[in-house]
Amino acid sequence: MSGLSAQLEAALQQEVTSGLIKPPSAGFLREPLDRVALTLAIGAVPLSIAISESLLAVSLLARVLDRSKSRRPARLPLSFWLWLLLAALQVGSWLLSPDRKAGMSEMRHLLLLVSLGFLLSSLGVAGSRLRAWKAVFLSSGLGSIFLIVIFLRHIVMFHANVEAGGPARFYLRTGGFLGNWMVYAIVEVIVFAGLLSFRAFYPGEQKRWRLIWILNLIAIAVSLTRTLWFVCWLLAGIELARRRSKWLWAVAALPVLLYAATPGPVRSRIRGSMDPDYYPNQERIEMLRVSWRMIEKHPWIGVGAGRINELYLQYLKPHEPIPRYRGHLHNNLAQLASTFGLPVALAAILLVLALYRDLFLAFQAAHQQEELFCCLTSLLALTGFLIAGVFDYTYGHSLALILLSFAVLSPLVSPTHSACGINDSGSSWQLKLTLARIAQMFSSRNAVR
Image (cartoon, rainbow, N blue to C red; front, side, top):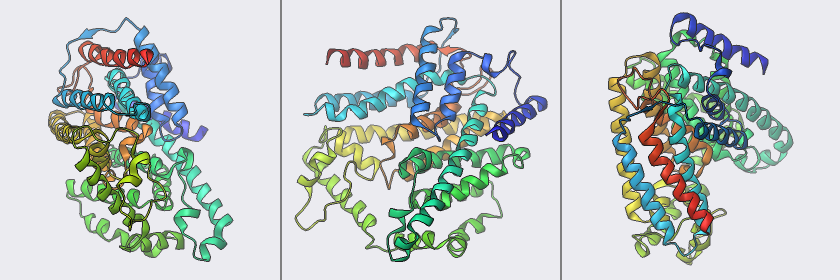
């Protein structure tokens, strides 16, 4: 642990020496409390949801109580207004749901996004976003070590079961510190996007961060999570194609090479994934059919947030198998359309298109190293999140939403001298006022209930 801390301090010191960032006058821990707590909260995402959300609460409280922030007009991007439309439609659908209590988790996700939008402007200071990403990289390294150790422990414990033909995914798959394997996979997709961008724009630091790269790659391989494998492979190909790298052919051949070099449990997982009759593959196809039946019957407001598990069997045909887990549908768009209705699904599509537009504009306007890094990271992270969302309901994981919000909004929260994003050395008062009103609406509604 101390070695990793020293690694982070050395990396930051080199940036200060080279002029990439300006040293804080009294050190990181003497910066505003909301910025310190938010940086630590983001850095804790690969380790623990309890730590991350507790630090977010500290940051939010410090932000609300600190009245010394300067108020500057904000240039709110198009995606912000489309997100407000999406949130309003989701709340409207939830209010019309026959079981509002079942949908409270979705409303908490909205409130989490409101809080993050309120807080992230505190990172609009040169060097603060890069520092938060380095904290994420270091904590992901620790999480990777833990996951690898658990995988090796499971191999020893369940070796006989796997050799007897038991499914490796059942006996060996783990989510490390995060517990759930899919939560780990979505968080790791965003971490991997950050590592790719960091490698592109900070090539001089690769030797120092090589160990983190190795640990993350090993953890990805032994996670036995197909979505994580596929998305990371695709993101690596996209980045190499962007750079017109001669190593693009190696990425194309990587699955074959890894299949030959990886342990038996990994190879058996790959073989099973290629089988069309493999149960998880058939389950996802069945869920798409069930989703379509729900949409046909409830096209405007959906069946109600949080009610998929309750209603799933009603939309199954007699010959269709009952899935082991049916708490959500394994597809973001199908889940949104089924639970909230087609208007929400359409608003989500428009939001994604607007986000890509705003992020590409920010990328074109970026000139400094940190801004370029944040812009590329945001595009890769958003792309990875959406691709993973074709195979699972990634929008339903709080840790993934925290890290994705940081990744995607970072280019839109730029230093005051930047040409792109929301210029805010302290806070953007229009954004804060709007988000505060939304948060107040949720709070008053819960109090009345």
